[in-house]
Length: 472
Image (tube, rainbow, N blue to C red; front, side):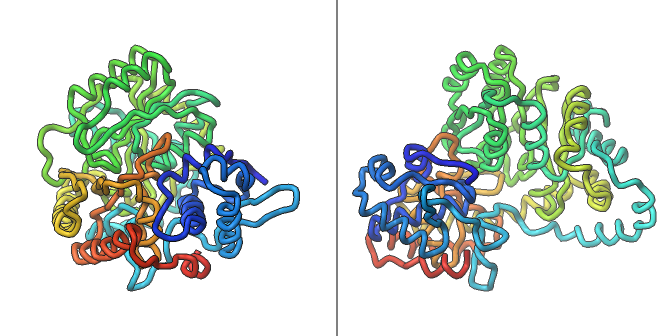
């Protein structure tokens, strides 16, 4: 057994789990979703039935029935002396459905590959003899690629040298590296809530204590809460996505960015600026968020959202001494970014402005289509206007995000519940709806959502148990 979750923590993680089906099945579905989202890791001991019943104000009989349902679908097993323990999911990718023509997967908010990518890959392969002549192990990155990334920042008005760049295997790898090298156990880390969940997971993994600062599509960042958190908690690090924030799509104003920077400087806080969505502009109103060129600002970016999720190349832009520290700590994680991927990236980085323009048109079609369909189909929901990024942060009015996602999954639509993006619980009245799929697919997804929403609010419940038993 690797870990244990308390009844109180599990109750908070479950959020708005109640649906229209019997309480024990709604509870079991809530636990299944936590397993699918990897918020409950394999070999985690669940609370005793009596403890969870007290935390959720349920009868012990209801919790026992939920645990029985979870055993039937292979999500937990009961061990003598150890209680109920979560099991490894019976597939490689725990958060997705098996792909087929009838499945719509909107969990991964990433557009299809940029159309020009195959030609760039073919060109890089044509130069394979030069690639294999290199040693292949380099924890800092190819010098030419680093120089071109530095040029990219200079074109944005941010003077940069190659010594300030470290190439990684994607942005997530960069965040893990930053967390493991620059943080100590129990250090405080400020994050937006909602936030990119894998970043929060990376900070939790090193034992950091997370502090949430609210952000929403309409009002932006809670600057008063941020200022109080900087002054009282003195966080070691702040992780922010200021430009086309995922999942809300919001961009910081200059005033908001200045407030965060001032608070961080006063508290001695490192700022990690995640720029993975920064170039996904559709019809931006006003300038992008701007943090000054300062040694305490670390920027993370990648080609995953702009070019293709399967191209695992990202980078860190930071002060040279931080780059050296990250490079020194990297061999514990990996021994460098693959040479072929770096060669492809070297050809792509100078074309990022061109690529971003094409992506903007693709995203515009998806955004406009799903926004119109949602407003037409769900006039009672709050569907925001966003000017870039990858998703809409939709207000559904009731704390039913989790049962809605479970019901939609049984109908062949994979989404992530709002609570998946929470730092300290909540967001059960929110649903992230990516607009990275083709318009026709998104319109079909809205139709499925309509049926699922009617179901969880009191219609005939679609059973997800058989689906979980065969697919997961």
